[in-house]
Length: 426
Ligand code: S3P
Image 1 (cartoon, rainbow, N blue to C red):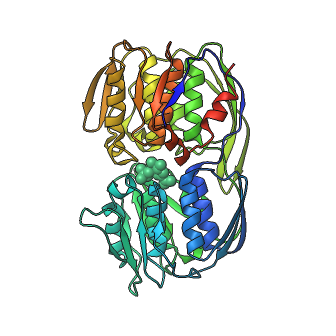
Image 2: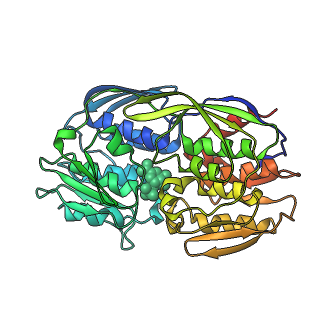
């Protein structure tokens, strides 16, 4: 469905956003693995997390939802039952990749499928290390879904150096390693989001530029209550909107302050933004607080490549900030964007060209410069929630507004985006 966004001039107020998607996936998974009842508050209302919930119901867990509170009755060590049907991860890479780690250590066979977009995304990155551990996994000839996972008697720990900085790959291995007596170790030299190690309280060692994360059966999760901090990736759309409008000021309550995710705030600070954070708290080692954002003129800066994994999901909306900031906007070292829900480098460049901007596309990023000349633009979401919301924010800033095609895909991470937006528009 096409969605129309009229020009707005000001936002003000307080926003309560649903729980972080990455933390919610993990809270559901840890609760499903644990033996007994866990309660998850402020769980993400996204379709992606719903995909995770559905998979664990098929594996025998009772999971009930009362608004944003989820109750999970976990099955304990190797307590899952063989699902009657194939597991469907929908659009969710996190569901598919993390659950494969868990299923590689079970005593029954499973098949995982996904939607059209997920079925194109690379799975070799998890199959290789899991096979090194002795897992029995087969994929399509292109190393994509469907994955067929068979029980293996030979699962053993490995020491694995991540060839791509990916929290999904790291977590898939750690989830498998949770089922083994001896320690599995994952080494990363560029940090990726660290929710799995944080929430499981895993031993993390630093050696020069490397981080070594260890896991074994000793770290197997126990039932607990979680409060999920609000999603900084969803907050990013409102943060950029507020910065770019005049005389605007919003507070986003309980936003995740996990340092492996707050790169977006750091980059916006380099660009001139100032943030105030109050009421800091934590749940399951995940910190959160109230973020106060005010309008600010921004200036483009060089974005360090080592920050890319930290801001990977925020690059689309950061690029919108970039085209309104002084100077040209460049992002490099971000080839991973080509393997997300859509090829986000191509999606951003195609949409920027519609505005009459000068765009140079690279294999690992793009440079955008010039001024917006075209009015009445219809942007393409390419069925990707983060592209859809980025161009919704851009439309709100255009004199004539704008339209985003196939906007419904925002349900993947934030089904209530429009209601949240309407609550702060003055
Ligand atoms: C995620 C990790 C990131 C991110 C995705 C969620 C996670 O992917 O893009 O939206 O929850 O672990 P990669 O770590 O594979 O880049």
